[in-house]
Image 1: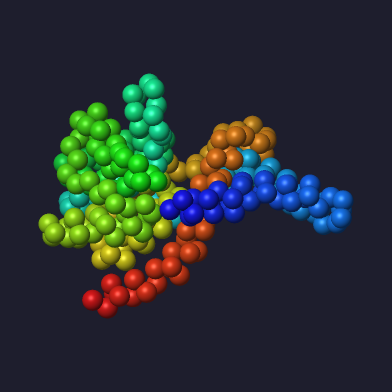
Image 2 (image 1 turned 180 degrees about the vertical axis):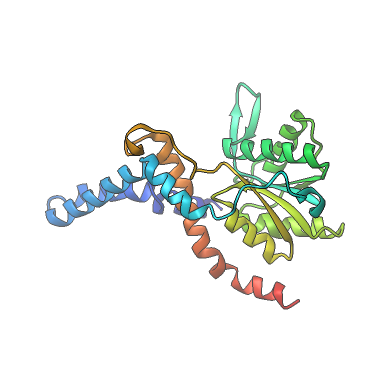
Length: 259
């Protein structure tokens, strides 16, 4: 897990682009032309990542699932709500302990609203960070309780989106559940949906946190922002996941299909 984290931090942007700037500085004496090229590419990459307009453009490509139609009969079609973990913040003094990350809190807020509107039970999926308790699912239960929504199941083993689906499956299938409302950010939904469908579930997508919505920045959103840099990192991670998951889990998916 730690190796995967380090690879993501240092190979994916912005970590990889920062390493490019360092490489350019190291090459400046011996190979100045190469150093200038590496410097230019890395700097332009960082500037592009920090532009809200680029975030919006990337999100438009990733966010292929429409928002849930609240006027439809989605609640009658589904048997449960599944909300995926999205990280945690450690030892927040204001809260007196660990709390869900901003992404996770956004998902839980939406899941709570869905649960209150439908009366459907809720499963929270999310394991430990680097082996340290509490799990994301346990923190989800605490936040849902603040919203007045009980948590029916806690899946506390998963560390990836694929494992969210794999470890949630036996908990749900043991009670005959085949149709789930899946809650996660819109840019994460295509990969999350694919993972749960590979486990044999019928998925009703309930995406939120759309980054493709109008950013409202002056000048078309080309001025760099720290928030955009953070959002771009999440989107780049999603691109890599979409590319790698069918390859990494092709054998497991084929085995499930042939059962």
